[in-house]
Length: 150
Image 1 (cartoon, rainbow, N blue to C red):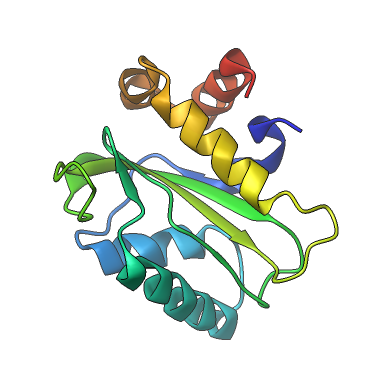
Image 2: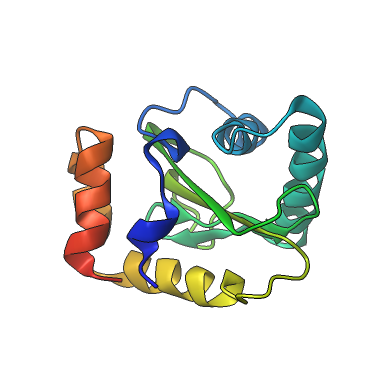
């Protein structure tokens, strides 16, 4: 299981438009291609998780995540906000890179926590934030995931 396998080109957006935390979350959820009702339900669930504590892990990276019945398999999306936004990250710094993870409440493959761990491990790599800033297209993003072999 490699992170690259979970990201389709449609679930990657390198220029998020949202200005606030809420707008960014809605935009990330929109990348999953769900219907409007499912998006609204998922937004409430992700928001509830964020209210427990920000998923901004520092170094300009956030990993919003939750379990929800609106998906039937593990789904991931990546978004980049080049100007950064206040996401109440643990280091108090703006967040530029967002990895959304959504899984069904019961998943046979049980990949939710391992994938969350892989993204956290990826984010801790010393050159990852810089390289994420430098990517110019979706293929560059996917290649970075492959290069890191996580």
